[in-house]
Image (cartoon, rainbow, N blue to C red; front, side, top):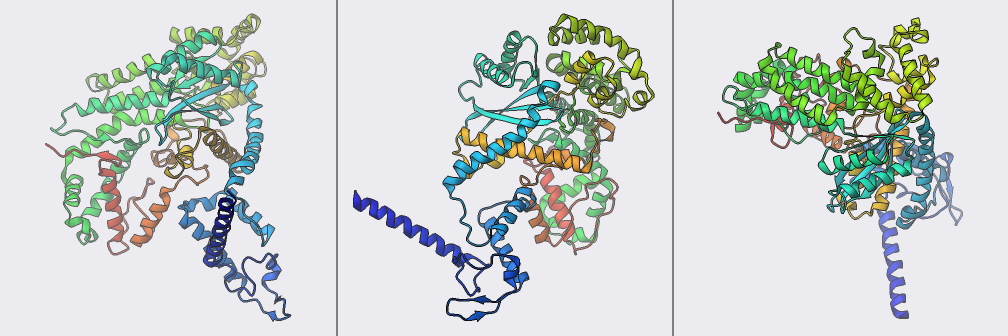
Length: 632
């Protein structure tokens, strides 16, 4: 036994020496210093780089490198760490990376880096505590605003069925935890018990609605939850419902015979990205056709390939292709606009979904020249999903309480709206005195009396976010104000809110992470990102987005990239590949994405055309953006 322990100890020391040799031998910084790189004494401050160093034998050696050279070598060591460990280049933009570099530089030479055990134990624990302090600030708002409990299921690389639980109000989304639900995901009773447990953890008084997927087990679990918790609602994910509408519409279009050729079909992309790609293609039709008749194209390698010839034929002479693109845009773009609204996080969407769905139907009819035969089937698809899955008391009540629609000339006075309003009041307001006060105060709001009729109110109700408007002008009707803010501050969607965060944590290299560690890591990453996003918006003094659909451009970052432009850019690993592509091709730009850029650059001796052709080919491959079926 002693021999075994001695051998183990020697092996341990041997590995440590080998590791130290690898560190010293592979470092750029310190290789020509007059003292070993592992010596603790040395450069301890910025001035030490410019003064001579005295060794033990009394000899004085002048500084061997300038500050600029020292900085370059440190950067090379940092780069090597990134390259050898496959870390995305975007991580250098992370504030925590800058903080780490500053802390190391402030400590000076001789810092002993933490071990893997330390990273997994006390360091992780301390960071969870720090993150919890941030989360507590948001939790303090829950009792005033009410929250939505978001449940989003996914499968990891070990085929475990995990459920992410998040909590959302108008101040942002907070990651709560992940639960391994492999044994309960298809059992409605077990799902109900799981949801009920999380509601209890948050506090029933705080939870206004629970949003889940639309599968059968979740629907049944939602009904059971509403039977037990009589003050909250279960609602399906609006983004998922609209995505199903789009899929049904595409199936309908594929079954239509248009010039004996199938229409475009979306691939498995994030919601409606393919449809916005079609719109971008149509907007760039003229520059694209110009590219295919240019000299650069003739000298390009793609011009000699069968795929390039086939694409050129489609772009230049296939009128049915462009007709199909136009038809697809006309029938799906209005729903994509709604999808942007319900899946956005910059402002609550509950007060807009009811009206925007009606507007989307009208836009589709108008796009098809108001011909009933042309739009009837599409309307039926939308109505089927809307009535059976998405049409809820909360959505209708929020429509009534949103002055942008309630005070509009085109306001709907359908009896169903009032009925659902009182259903919502009955369920959410248990105190009878409060219920009667809210009922009376509704007349003040409807007839624009008091503060509601003031000049400030009348001039801003169409531009202010509904929650903000009620905060400013609802003081004379406090009970109605609290009820309205509680509903108008809700979200409509639970899907895909932190997929990129989970994908970073649960990679192939880390697929054996326990649920406990997965919880802690995502808890830190997601909630820190939320804080960073909120701080960034405050710094820029951004106003609440009132979510006017017409103001959202088709090439919005929401469509081009699932990451919000305010996110920390640590999860956009693909941009490294894109930048590398640009470097390899010797060009600095790709296909123009913004409207108004109608010229195709001819610089680069054909390389720009090659790059653009490669991009369009990627878009037209089966596993990329769309499929083009060429069988006549």
